[in-house]
Each structure stands twice: as structure tokens, then as C-alpha cells.
Image 1 (spheres, protein in one colour):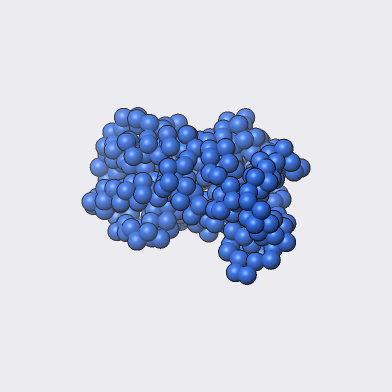
Image 2 (cartoon, rainbow, N blue to C red):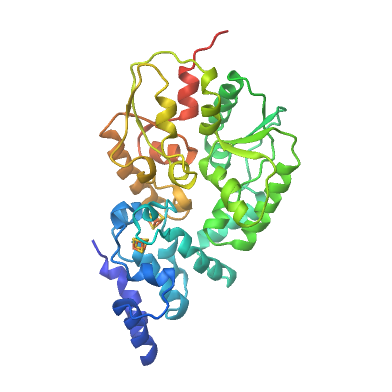
Length: 386
Ligand code: SF4
Ligand code: SF4
């Protein structure tokens, strides 16, 4: 599966290096005789032990974009090869799904160990054109896709944070979520000028932009008088809960993903019986990043009569939909191939897919699947007393 054609530019770069540098690079990469190896070097020297779990590794099948291949490229970019849009591209071909971390003997997340290199490159003005466009959108509009669609304010006690994918593609999902949450007794607030959490800027290494965006988003949320914040997108929830904390940016309200809020109120919900058969697609951000590996099964198992299937890879071993880590924004073709691969696996179990992430819904629908967000599915089956 190795793509020696794509590897050849790395070999060419080593060939062109000065003799001493060339020898040092070859020794470091191939022989691994390194005094104090950094994580990148350890990963670069690994025989790709996690590649079978990596969606890019499985679907792209190229050495340079495999987990260890990306680490090799990152290592070479540090000292041995010139950083150009062509040479840096492999390190952006990643779903940031952290499947590698589940199987890695060092517990590395390739997405995390690549981040400092992306940050340095961005700081030096070396980036992919598409990455720059997205970061510019975030800086200018606080929205990934450019100018955001117009929204209405609504007063309430619990803020529903829709996120960029819902705003752009699934305004109906926002309505459904409001309706579901109000059915279980919450007074939902939404704000018309909601700002992006900044995750794409973070994962693409635009560190200064991310900090600016995150501070502005935190300022807006901290001014609100609400009991807590419920998020439709698990990546937004992970960003506000975990990544902001890493940067010392505080949100004074508790942050929950909608599946967590449904779980808190589950004793108030009754469902109509169904004989449907469904398969669960666990989103990486929910199952791995937020550590809720079994929550969808737990929630769905409360629906009487529902036949629940799990695919080969589920829970913390789930396989990315392909749209994670902003991959669809920079390489849509590969992201869709990954989505098709995942869809094939899911369809072996059942025709109807339940997930809990707007980006997963969009990826699997774009690949041809029939997909419900858990919010929509619960809204459809909830027993109303009025
Ligand atoms: S993440 Fe771990 S298992 Fe995967 S290639 Fe790197 S060192 Fe090897
Ligand atoms: S984060 Fe996901 S896509 Fe990126 S290297 Fe790890 S397993 Fe592969």
C-alpha cells in the first residue's frame, strides 16, 4: 500500500542535503540511533503500528499520510527539507480522530504531536491556501464558512450552542433540538450572533488566531445569564471544555453535549415503541475526546422494541466519518472516500444510522447514508402527553 511515488520527494530532499546532514537524517530515520528521541522521532521510527485503525492510513494507503509517515514528514520539516505548500501537505491529511492513540504503545495522538510543527509553520507564514482561507473566515466572521446565515435571538435559561455545521447545513436540526429540550422542560435560549469555538484554527495550527477567537467566544458566553450551555456538536463541546482549559481560557458555565443533557433528563422521557433496526456511529469527539464511549447505546437502549446494532469498530475504537479535524475543508475527495468506507461498515449492520454529531451526519449523508442525529431520533420517538 506504500506510495513510493509520493515518498520520492522526501528521498530527493535527503539526496540534495549536505553530506553530513544527509547521513544524520538517514541514521535518525532508518537506524533510530538517537540519544534523546522526541515524540515525533519515536513515532517516525515506529513501524506504523496503529495504521490499521487510522482512517487516512486505511483509505489513502500512502506512506507519507500514514501516522508514522506524517511524523517522518514533520521530523524532516524541522531540519532537513524546505517547507513548501507541497512538502507540508501530508501533515494536514489527518482527521484528528485519535484512533492512533487507542493502539499506540506510547499513547501518542499523531494529531497532537503534529500540532507544534503546524503552529511553527503557520507562525512563519507557511500554510496551505485552504487553511489560510478558513482561518481568515474565522478572524473576519467568527464562522468557518464565510458570512454566517442570519439567525434570531430567543430568550431562555439554557443556551443551545448550534455550531458552524448546524448553522450552515442543518437549521432544521437546531429547531428539532430546541423542541426536544423544551419538551423535557428546559427553557432554551439561542443567540443570533453565536461565534465559532475556533477549533479549525486550533487544529490547523493558527495559534494566535485560535487564542483571539477563543477569548472572544468565551467573553460572549461569559456575559450570558444562563444555567448551562448545551452543544449540538461534540467537537465544539470538547473545544470549550478541554482545549480552552489548556489555554487558561475560562467559561463560567458548565458545557454539555446534547447527549449528556438527554442522559441527565432521561427519567422524564417516555418513548413510543418501535420495531426499527438501527446501527450506532459513535463520533470520535464524543466517544474518545469527551470519553463518552457508550452513551449513545445507553440512551438508545431506553427505546422499547428498538433493535440496536454496533459496527465492527465502535465505542472508543470507533472509525472516523472522514470529516473530523477539518479534513473535508482541505481535502474533500479523501474525506468522502473515508465516509464511504465507514458507511460500508455501518450498512453491514443496519440501513438506518444514529449518530450525535452534525459533521458525522453530513459526512455519512454525503456518502449516501440515511442518518439521524440522536436529537432527531429522540424527537421522533418521544411520547408526548399533550
Ligand atoms: S502513533 Fe504510536 S503506534 Fe502510531 S505510528 Fe506513531 S508511535 Fe506508532
Ligand atoms: S488522528 Fe486519526 S487520522 Fe490522524 S493519524 Fe491518528 S488515527 Fe490517523
